[in-house]
Image (tube, rainbow, N blue to C red; front, side, top):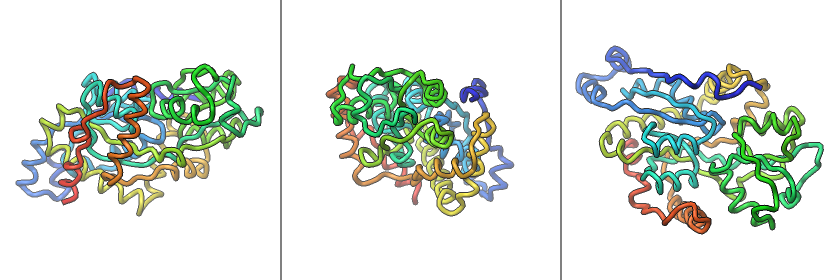
Length: 332
């Protein structure tokens, strides 16, 4: 399997030229407003969670709304979060636990929930081991992307709820894109992974599912931004979110178009999978940009877990960390 990081060492820069904005049908005043928008350094993970963002970048919607961008692709969202804390990236996607840690370390703010991905996360075991319960991972080697949201949820919530404390299993630190190969080589017994890698492992007869995350955590994935960016460029944030609202309609009304674009990404990186396998993986991602009404209570629960585990020093100030006002403006 080809390394997914290959090809992402360079930075891609696309601009929305004046001619392009005119072609989108904008008038003179709108053109001036578009010209004043700041470029966005966009981070995203190359697992299935990041593919809605990948589609956004390929959809042409940012150009239509006058937003320039530079893209930074990495294996998982916690890496994007670290880049944002270091102010190397302006925006990026990741789940609640990573966002809370990013807020604690760098004051990051959430401008929208882009998707829910709980169905895309599975704990899987090697098929030859015939494991069916989380409890059976005792004494086993479990591949886990340590520091990621799904990794934290497994270690802090799921494993303890099944009677497994730290030390009862061997956590093997590994990027999600390397786990299927490790399972195939039998260097690990199980993995905590996301799509499309779960579907690939299942289709190739390498692994079977113990459980997915949906019943434990629906896993809202945030689009987060640095506080510097939202303070200096609020109009850019609004235009950016308008692009997301346009893209969301494609996921609902033209799913084949979306699927073809994202499928092309994975096949171009050397992954071998059928359209049927890929479609199953993509169907686990529910794209619906917005700000759910129960979000604050969900995040409070996640923060309390992280505080108990001493991964953050304090509960975030939600009035500063969660910024629904930008999405409200984008919907007008």
